[in-house]
Image (cartoon, rainbow, N blue to C red):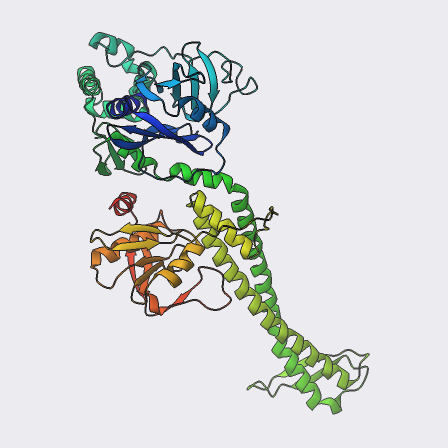
Length: 568
């Protein structure tokens, strides 16, 4: 779900209190649509995230560390030139729209004080972050340039005058009177939530549904009362940030009484947004970057499935091998009854307890001895083929298990985990390494994710096979507890320590289910055993293990519970 104007109002109110008067000390651009501003104010350092991500546009304070590119992008360099060292003079929302202006008092190249304005437009796939000179109204640049080829109506290019997004001619809900509100809605047409969104600025579909739920159906006065009460709370900045884990998680700065899922409340809007969006943009970016790789791996899986079908059919065909051996033995025994030119031999099959008569086809061009040798050759060939087929079927199935685990990891990976997966695929020969200039390769130690149970016991989770291997065979002690979804691709999970309760075991099992192909399932089987019972067979790919002495429990992963473990 997207941020509406009411959520933007709450964010701006929070940022005004915490950031105005603060100095921008550092500016980073970790992604092509994201900015991180390091701001020092009142003796404290804070990080402000500004995102023009097409699916997850937002702004809020963040405590999450980010990995930044070695070479800053051009827009980041421009911001450093104009805004680094600047003092935040003001942060304001344009009406109830999803547009924020942040004014910074900076110094130009001559040392004179100037005002620079960062315009953050939180508008879905049209989102943007634009730096302008408010004195001239000209655009210095945008994180996403909009050329005439992209839009004929509104361009974002250096040197052009900044044009605000077109107004939608909606009414301000904070000043709406009763008569104005009631006249705006056509009660006979139905779909009142959509009408509220269409008539009033800043109200998104989720908020409109909440108003309708509070007001009930068919009663105009109750609907007005619900709307008026909520707008009074918004006007007075009485927010209650929360995430509701219904069929799909939903966040809001007001209580969502129309949803029935589990609720998680927050003491700030920024923490609420960070919890809701945590990892989403990074995983989305990684999925986009790895789209071709995921498609190629799926193609290999499909080819392997076809290969298994063919090998299985060949295996079935080679079941005639024993028949060929029997024919050869019978020909040898009854050779005195056969002469060159015969086309069949009828003989009693004394290898069968019932001793039936069988008809053995012969090649009339061959001698009886040569016919017998031909059947023995067919037997040996079929026997060798059965052994080869069995080995190939087992090998191909192991490959598929490995590739399925990699696919699960790629779909839930952040940029760093995705990079480690690519390196692993290159090392295993599934991906061709790109030729690079000779330079010293920087080896980075795998770093599994760390969680803490409700009993304050550390739980480590591998996010890819390299991390799984490092966690299970290098970090974990023999008496630590190891968990993995039963016969389902997923991550290795390790509980550090010997002493813990059922709550920790259950939470670790939830982590194993959450980081597996069964994330969206219920009653997921999870095996657990001690590390000393987990072995890696020689010659197997990274992350592959066999284990014994395991017990199985069943859990249903809940995102809200997983978040609590990460924040503990």
